[in-house]
Length: 434
Image 1 (cartoon, rainbow, N blue to C red):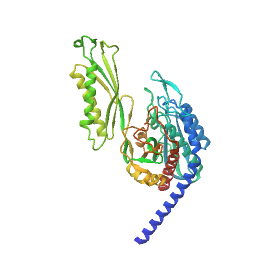
Image 2 (spheres, rainbow, N blue to C red):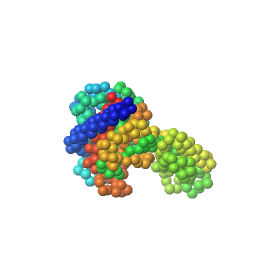
Image 3 (cartoon, rainbow, N blue to C red):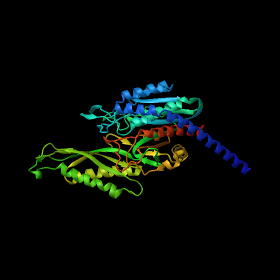
Image 4 (cartoon, rainbow, N blue to C red):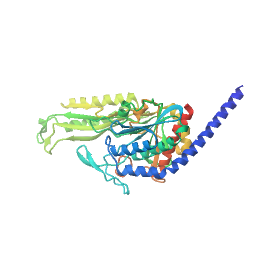
């Protein structure tokens, strides 16, 4: 009896493997046929970027495309978000796929025929706008996935929810936005999402490669603001003042001890950075106050609490020691949880990624101290977030322009792998859960 059961299970496994191979071949053919369209979509988005919660043109193009495929479309979600629902002909789970839409206030320096020339106002200043993080690539990839899956909806065992999200880089100050707002407005419900997949193009990972991590792959993040208030005086008479510049310098130095002396860096990385400091108006006037802004990054709830508590303690007590005061706002305007890849789901779907890209092209990576609001979706359903290679073959990752810079560059030949990966993750998860 045991032998017969083993033979039956082996036959089922072989049948599933054959079915996966056939499906992957079909998806590969369809994705390759769409390469020209994917590049054209990406270049159009790249030439016409829009900042967070301002993606009006972008959302219109996406919504029109989804509607043309017969997909049920909802617009205006979390200001400019677009959600498409594709119902397969057969019962099964609900799989969500996400792409982000917003550009950054960066002036492009790359010499491309489709380089952005867009200018806009940001924080009261005229700035260039650029897709300097690859969100244009993500949208084009997911549009192709929608075209492929809608073409085989009669064979779909379940429902696919396409989430095109605004303001991943953070909504303008005072506005709600991004994944957090999408979740608040019910994007993970009606129908309820069972699993969510997402990718991020990477300018320092070679084309044709996929990198992933089980558990925390990207850091949780909170921004911070510290306002130090002292007493102003003539610069020639510092003894009449309580100098907030000196106090701020001591606070910044003290904050560096948190990571070096309080975080167990053998287990998880962490970051405490002061990125901006402003105060004073003239060389011979001691300012009354100084404002600092920065970011903290962490990978566990306990580290988040410890770092937050220590930032508050060091800032307020250091200021008190000098006769000043310090007001700490942490978080100040945004807070993203850790982007956490569900271990069981990652183990289940890793063969799909390896079967799509080739086992030698899929590898583990260390945790990334950058942050992603994809984490808000993962709080509602198990999810996997992975990185897709976008660096030209043979390039040096150490000197390739990084994300969020004017020289950011992506090799478009890697887009097809992203399309294949998202399609195969969707179809093979459905096949296992139907």
